Image 1 (cartoon, helix red, strand yellow):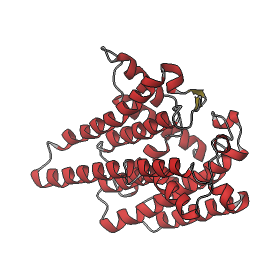
Image 2 (cartoon, rainbow, N blue to C red):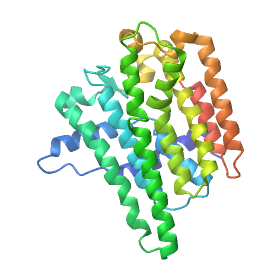
Image 3 (spheres, one colour):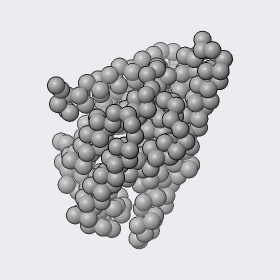
Image 4 (tube, helix red, strand yellow):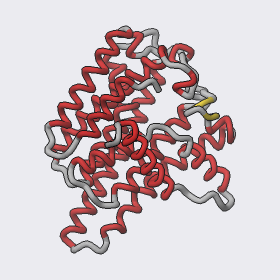
Length: 306
């Protein structure tokens, strides 16, 4: 029987294969931006969002291939956000996942273009799920296409002004303030980080045919996971190392950012991560499907050091 780490590594390897299938070939007059896109996506990482998407899809009985374009797309969207986060106008970071950031390697202009291209290409990629269902009987085809449309709507909303971009905007605005409230900080965490976790898990549930109430409970579960993940990120920015994180530590302090840790203290922050994670596990246990690996994955987020 495989250990959790062995199972995790195997799933990451499978996700890498899925992502690789949908990356664009590096050719033509636009070759440089294609290289920058692929460099960014292939830099590695936890592949947490496509993993959560696939596991949630299977939790609700999903067995098809339509999930794969969405798995690749969520990682493209996540990667574009990191590419833009690292730009001089934002966090101005030189390292990401242990490698030079995209704008450092390709220049600032191509860092911007690579991020733009990844976001746009994510939606091109999601649309590749549509032909999968063209040979279905008409009543099933309509149902499946409506599911694909709903999943794309969730992905667009959670990545946009009412999700990740909205959270990033509030985060930048907060840098101008001498102090921010806990409510403002939670808004930032909910939208900047948790929104894409929600997009991943809700999409997995929707494509598997989950009901409206089930998708709403998954949205709450994903909120807890995302906020816990971001608080842990804030903790690691203080307690982590460059070797573990693959990027400079103390960047929040360098940029004058107030975090959950600065507002609530290190120990209280650790307790909140545990509380949110425990609640997320309880929601997963309320579903009939096998959530064993998902629960282990959430628990692992508490103890991670990178």
